[in-house]
Amino acid sequence: MRASIVWVALVTACGGAQARSGPLDPGQVDASPSIECLPDPDVERDSLTRRMRFGWTLAEESFSVPPPAPPSDRSALNLETWSEQVLSPWLERKTHTIEAAREELDQAAEENHRQRIMGGAIVGLMYEDVARVLRNIPPPEELHDEPEIQELYQEILQSQARPFLEHARRAYSACAQNAVQPASMRHWSRFCSGRERNLPARSGITGPASGETEVEVIVD
Image 1 (cartoon, one colour):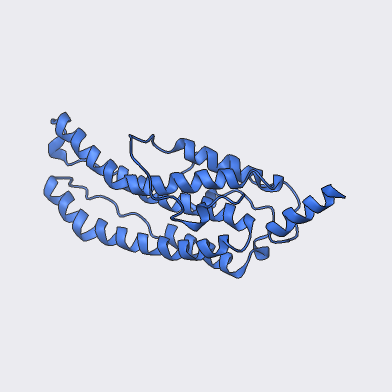
Image 2 (cartoon, rainbow, N blue to C red; image 1 turned 60 degrees about the vertical axis):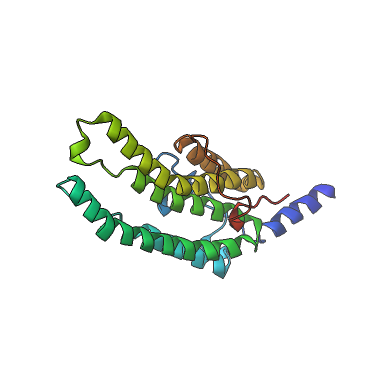
């Protein structure tokens, strides 16, 4: 009897949707961040709430904003102009689409536990994507023979990417912990743990304030 009660409680917590049949894709831990990296949920997408489906669609739109290619002539002047006229507008548009998706995912996370798990993974991927672009900006050609200055330049890029990495790290960590139960979503825990492990190591930096993103909250 107790086992039945526990099973009903888990189903209710996850939204009471019909379980998906067949093998589930475990997701792509090592691929570049994209919505296609996600594991299969244990239910059909139509079983998710309207808000969750909308948040998912907005997340897909965030990945459809391609990163700008650096100029072929990578002089310091050209890179500065590119950064101001191309990269900055891209970053503003990208963060706007992420914030819109995150707002919906935050609210969807409050609707059931499954969506909290999925929201954490999606938020992690979106922020990881931005951090990857910022970390990969090439140095000016003038610095090729100046290793010390080039190292300083790279440190500046890392500092700009760091807030996005920390958001991704927290989202993945919470997803991994939230997805321990139910067993049908445990492959999401492995996915998020793997993505978090693959992020660049911290360098003594404190992350964002606890509880800043609802999808990161761990439900007891």
